[in-house]
Length: 429
Figure 1 (spheres, rainbow, N blue to C red):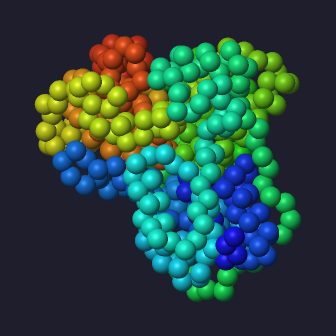
Figure 2: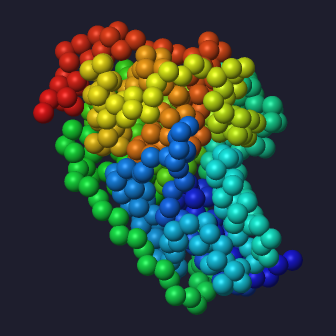
């Protein structure tokens, strides 16, 4: 058994509550009477474009994730520990070798580029590697089927869970008591990330705080305001305050776990009753789970041009067309409005995400993987599982039994922006 120190690598789980990797790391350090070093990587992975390297990360996305990391650091410092920032997985490997780590602990991410990171980190390494799957609402042991046999179609997946009475695995509290000491080492300087001025048009409020405390406060406030009663009526709006839960912002960084979010929703329903609207919040969290389990089953296959389909969609758009789409300079005003909102705020409503994705794939003949790469580089709530799964779904190479979805931009504008308010907000100089 390895008795060296313990490094806990926080990935997309920037919290202490309901964090199996953190709990395991603390337990290992206590068991071996050794030090515990919390670490975070500041260099995000990029999805490559079909024709070259991926686009640069947006400043707003960088700032949102930076704030979540700083919030976690503040939590750890209050407990007598700290969070060390390193720029890359290669730097983490050198750090682990330098301090003679005996154990490295992190959440498991079953996406190909993230898995390649882990291979580089652990190549011929002297430490024990502990990888814990923890980002789904339902734990593997609680599924009514083996993860390798997850139904490809969401409806079948959901029905099997409901038939088995599976709603969520139990959220676990953070470890109690004092933390093991940190090793004696010079701490690398934290990067200086510029926070762009808030755009007053953004649906993400200026006072929204990244990090675990802010995440729980935001979700509790929406529950107290009765959002679950209204969600079905408001979820397809294009912009505004509290028309959606915006849980994705905190689930993506891991400042809030899906299990804790549902635990808080359960408390709300115990006092106010369940409704079709409150059910729909769970329903959409199950979509998030499904994309994760599809990665477990299919892995890198989801990143091929043809995805899970027999053939790849026909592509006619050029890299120049992609630039026009990214900048909101297409032939469709509603699409342009959405792409400019994304560019200026790092956020889009779910409805607008579907509309602009469909336009790139179906109207412009674009490679769906290029759209996925742009979203991943710009969205505050970038989530490799949901991003890849949703784009494959729209393109007809993922889990959609109908072979893809087309959203007619004129029909969508008439239905969701009949007065043109949203378009004027983003297209008026």
